[in-house]
Amino acid sequence: ELFGGDSDDPDSMGMDVDGMLGMGGEPSGDLDKAVVAAAAVAAHAAKEQNKSNSFSAAAFAVSKETDTDDVPLKEELKPKKELIPTKPDIQPDEPPGAFTMNHYPARAPTEISSDYQRCGMYDVVPTIAFINAYQIHAVAATADMRWMFTGGEDGYVKKWDFNASVNGKQLLTQGQRHSLVDGVTKAGIMASYWDHADSAHPSGVASGPETLSPVYSMAVHSQGMWMVSGMKSGNIGLWTIRHDEGRRVAVLGKHTKPVSVLRTTPDEYGLVSGAWDRACLYWDLNTGRVARVFNEHSSQISSIEFQPQAGGADTGALMMTTGIDGQCLLWDMRVAKPVTSSLKQFEPALKTPPWASSACWSRDGRRIYVGRRNNTVDEYDIAAGIGGSNGPVRTLRLPTNSGPVTAVAMMANGRNLVCASTDNVRIWDLDLPPVVAGRSTVPFQIIPGHHGGCVSGILVDEASRYLVTTSGNRGWDGVSNNVCLGYEVAPVLK
Image (tube, rainbow, N blue to C red; front, side, top):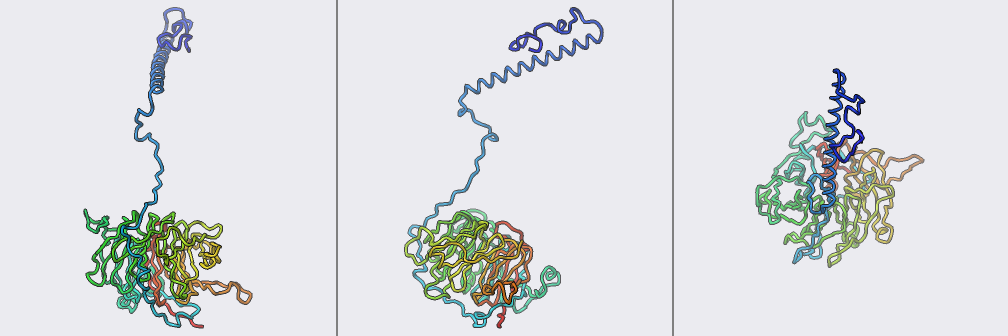
C-alpha cells in the first residue's frame, strides 16, 4: 500500500523505485546511488514483514480451527489455582475409646494456703532465668512444681529441677545477667533433656530416619509419671519420665498439622488435643483411641481449658476451646453420647479484631477471660452467655500500643489476672473500682522481666506460689527474645 500496489502480493510493489523517486532513468551520482540503495533496503524489509504477517495470519487461522482442549498449554501458562486446605474429616476410632471423664473421678486439687486465697494482690518478683538459645513454645510442670518441662524450636524436651533452681543451687554468670532485670540471679538447673524425635508414623515404628520436631505443645502427669508433646507432623508423643526417662512409648496419630494445644482431663486418664488442622480430639490414654471429635472450629486451635471445680457442684463440667480467629466455644462434658455442636459460642466485642491466642477460667469457673489482638481482654459470664447474650460483660483495656495479649492466667485468689502482651507482663486487679476518692485508678501492676517479645505461655503454680513465663511465637507470628523466667510469689495482705 505504501508503494501503491496490492498489499496482499508481497512481490507487487506498484511503481518502480525510479518512478517513485521521479528519476525516469538510470541513477547518476553517488547521492542518487545512496538514495536508491536506501529505497531498496526499505523495500526488502517491507517484503519480509509481509511474509511474517502472512505466517501469523495463517497460524491464527489454524489455531481458530483447532479445538483448544486438544492443545496442551505450557506449564508456565496454565492458570494457577489458590488452594485452600480443606478441613480433615476426622472421626472417632472404631471401636471408639472410652470417655474417661464419665468413668473416673477428677484428681484432687492442690491445697492452697488461706493467705494466698484471701489476699488482694501478690508481690511477684523475678529471681530465676532458665537459659535457652531458641524460642520456647510450651511449658508444663508437675503439680508440686518439683519438675518443670519446656520445649521449643530447637526440637528438644528439657527437664528442669525447679526446687534446686529456687533454692539457688546455681547462680548466673555476670554475662548471663547482663540482659536481665535486677533481682534475677539464680540459674535454672537442667536435670536432663532428650530428642523430640518424630517418626511421622502413627504406629510409633519409624519407617525411616527420624527427624527432630519443634515442640509446639506439652502436658505432664501431675505426679511426673509421663508426659505428652505435640509434633509438627500432627503426631502426639507419649514419653516416660520417672522410669526409663525420655523413652517414647506410644505415638497418637490423627492430626494432619502441628499440634498446638494439649490438656490432660481432670481425671488424667484422657487427653484433649487441638491442632492447626482445626480439629479438637478427646483421646482415651488407656487404649490410645479417639473417643470424641469436637469439630466446630474454623481455624487453628489456640487454647483448651477445663472448668475449675472450685465453684461448687455445678462447676467442672464444661470445656472451653478457642481458635486463632477469635472463636470461643463451650462444650458440655456431661453428655454421654458424642456432641455434634458446642453449648455456646462467645463473640468478641464490637470493633475487636478476630483473634484469640490464649484464654482462661476464673477461679470459681463462672467467667472466662480471652486475650485479644487490640490490647484488650474480654470477660464473659457463662451464665449470661448460656441464657442469651454471647458478648463480653466487660473489656479490660491495656495501655495503647501494648501489643496483642498472647497469654493470660488466673491467680489463686480469683481476683488477680496475669496477662502478657508484647511490651510487658501485667497483673490485673479485677475488683479495683475505676475511680477512688475522685481520682482514676490504675487497675494493674507491671511484673518486670519481659519486654519487647512475644510471651508464649504463663504457668502458674496450682498453689500460686510460683509463676513462670516463656518467650516464643508458638509457630505463628511474633518476635522472641528466648527468655524463660521464674518468679516467686508472695501474698500482699491488707
